[in-house]
Image (cartoon, rainbow, N blue to C red; front, side, top):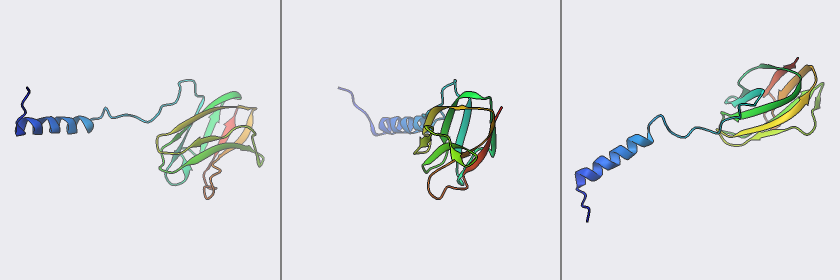
Amino acid sequence: MIRFTKSSLSAVAVAIALSACSSSTATPETLPATVDLEVRAVSGLKFDKSAYEVAAGDIEVGYVNDDSIRHTLVVVQDGTTIPNFELKVNAKGSTDVGTVSLAAGNYVLFCTVPGHQNMKADLTVK
């Protein structure tokens, strides 16, 4: 039979608590290495950049939520949303990945969640 003293149990509890506070805690989901364009939703109802640039063609877009509320991401050109492409991130640390085919031109990235209309960024496709 194993016997624990009060001091040995305290030492074990401290060791467990310290290991839980270490820098090796779980990280949020990560994006695949194949992503051509990474966009992050950040606090203040904005994206991490005001402008992005990417090469024309099939573009794999990775969306990361660094905010505590849900967001979406669509691509708009000349006031028209590009069909069949919308990324959604719900909780902080969540990600979504999708592919959209874009020709060279100027686009806008936009969050469609009501009240997030100021959450937009320019996208230049070359």
